[in-house]
Structure formats: structure tokens, C-alpha cells
Amino acid sequence: MITCAGAVLEVCMRKLVFYPEIVGFIEEEKDQFPSVKVQYVFNSPPKLVMLAHDGQHKETVRVDNWKREHLLHFLREKVKPSSSAI
Image (cartoon, rainbow, N blue to C red; front, side, top):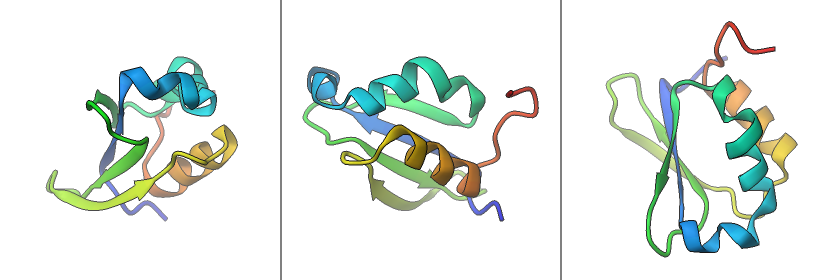
């Protein structure tokens, strides 16, 4: 069941070194989700800002302790991946 039109992954660029799972997602899997944008926000812990179909903020989910596979599973459940993704 798809519940969100998209999401914004907010993270502080300076803190990325502490979140290798998030870095791996951004570098290797993010392209599977064209409706997920990465936004670098100073001093922000990694979090997903889920967007409703009208583009408005729906909910915020902290993902700083998530493994990459959990992040992928969550996004596949909540946000439509690209049809061209493998």
C-alpha cells in the first residue's frame, strides 16, 4: 500500500560520516526512488519527511539508527519506486 507521494531525506552533510548506512543508500539506492529528494540541513539528524499527495508535510520519521535494508523496505512500502528500478 502506497501512502505518500514522496519524501525528503534530510541530513547534515558534516554528520554523514557517522551514518554509513545513510551514505550507502544515497550513493547506491536513492535513484530507485525518483520522488525521494536529499536535502542537506545543517545539524539535522537523518530523517525522512514524508510528503502527502498535495506536496504538504505528512509525517517525519527519524532514520539515524536504521540499517540500509530497513530504509529500503520502508520506502518501498510508503513511496512508489521507479518502474525502471531493478
